[in-house]
Length: 48
Image (cartoon, rainbow, N blue to C red; front, side, top):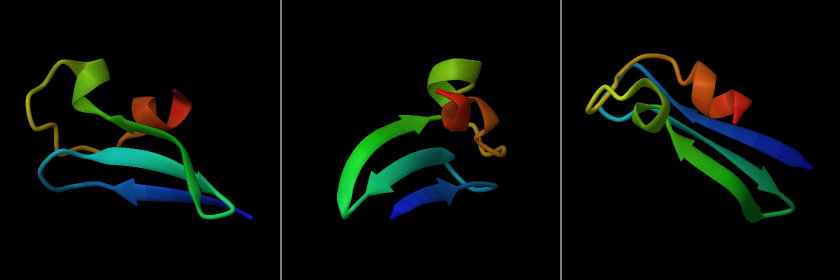
């Protein structure tokens, strides 16, 4: 089973992909937008 975990609209939005209980990928939105503590929806982090 794949699970997409999303943290959004608060301090440091991010996304993580979990497969069978193991973290496959994780990214913070601020790495792509270059906005420190970006609180928006992590669209670019999900695409990565």
